[in-house]
Length: 149
Image 1 (cartoon, rainbow, N blue to C red):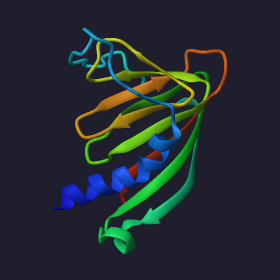
Image 2: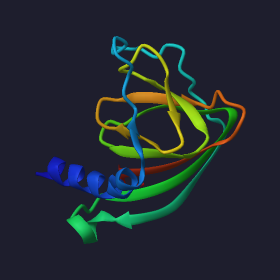
Image 3: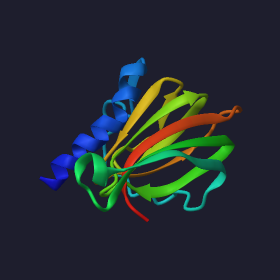
Image 4: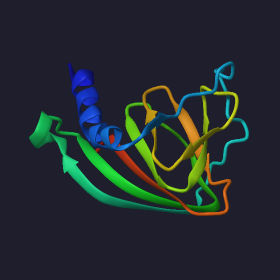
């Protein structure tokens, strides 16, 4: 039941992104789905700002005493990196507001390019990292359900 509530909260958080975005992205190209150990993954952030825009205590909304719904704005400069991290127990939806960025997933043998308007769905079992391989800043909005700090 608790997992169902987390899924509902994540869908609630991302519903606005999906309905406002022209493309749902984040899928691995055909023939490239494979376990990827991410042995060359970047593990330190660089050239990225990560600001919390807002947060909702989910105890009031859904009875979760230990989870928040959070919205963040990330700006990743050219060459910048969002380091390797896991989404175990932390579902998220990310929309690219401006620019483009490449995601490296534990479930794909190649990088996945995301462009303005794309949405990436992240859930349990996924580990990944991002790099801005373009010559312009990439602006992302990330909504996630996370354990309270």
